[in-house]
Length: 171
Image (cartoon, rainbow, N blue to C red; front, side, top):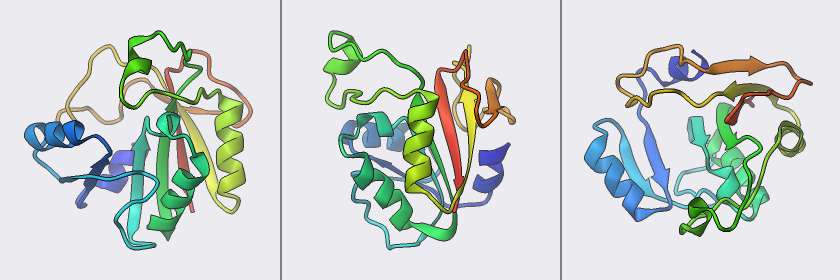
């Protein structure tokens, strides 16, 4: 599995803008550290992170350039970045999700996601994966590897059943 092989024997830090989410993580997950941080201004030295996993974040951030710049800043020169977004999600302002404190403000299809990342990470290799919604949710400690429902997307082919698209960026 692409992600799990990079995360073995590592120290990880969970960053979340919501204090409630940080408190939940501290109470429910035993490994790693958790801090409150804005993805557009992370409290890490430039080039200090080997692997960044940022799932379901991008759709919440008004200024995508500041977010992507920050990922690039904290990632080291040979670092890897994993980013996921909901795929073709309807942005209905009346949905419960969009009345929350951090609503989804961007909608992504494959072309939009690919264009934004390709323009920003010009000299990087980017591979894409689709993720279908799993029938069961498992804690990180009990998940089976490889993860069910994740498959590589051919470069020019938009997925049909995906709930999320994952980009693997190698700097």
